[in-house]
Image (cartoon, rainbow, N blue to C red; front, side, top):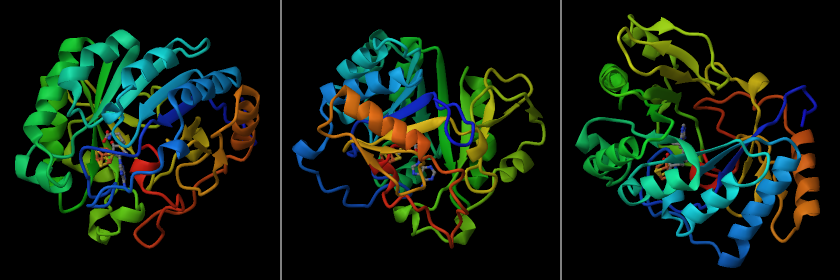
Length: 317
Ligand code: SAM
Ligand code: SF4
């Protein structure tokens, strides 16, 4: 479906849970989230009905995210059923990778074609710091399980944080020479719980290019990332710049939160509830959300925090 500003909305990101087995400092509070009443969250059947309604409006691509989608007990079933909805051409998933040793193969068999894995640092102490106690070793076990499972594409995501990992741009980028994966650097977005970061943490994507003078620009591939490649690399470098150079003009996505709210824009507090509705009602709400999608998200920086009104784990990054 085409929105008011001529954008063809074909991509739905579904957060299947707000919960997570890590506590990344830029994403969620140290104590985690208050577990919401089960009755307020979408059921698996409601999620699938929302996908059917979205597909009837022209959504062809789904990304399953969270919170951490792999802590959801019925994640494999959700993926399998979502991938089977007529009109859905591609199901992808974003994960911290920790539970992939058990789940990579079942997810691949359920129809998940592509995986994004989050990895902000190659240093075990820094990984434990930024995730508030995650184990880098567990991440690598998950990464290798994903490589073995044979997904069509694996992308690694690092949130670029000045004073934390700007000294690791080169070694992170080197992973694209070592493995057939893309390495993407995402500018830190000022969400509620990223308030602990000072202005020095918000660095623009151009820092990556300064650190990688050999990187050659490539044509865009339809995603929001600017693409580069190191000589001899097996994968691309992607730069995602929601803060310094927003890409709202090409945004083709809407989001569905685990508690059943359609969010037409990550950084707006506009929400269209689906909980308790059936196909027709969900379709009408999705249509309203697409028509209500704002032209752009306004300035974002240390002084202008996101208007999302939720942390990232409650939206689905
Ligand atoms: N738990 C999964 C993971 O970490 O990949 C999926 C959910 S997580 C919210 C999705 C993505 O959002 C991750 O790549 C994470 O790094 C990113 N993210 C979370 N908070 C962010 C922020 N304040 N700025 C930029 N990216 C953020
Ligand atoms: Fe969990 Fe992902 Fe948020 Fe980290 S970024 S706290 S892994 S949801």
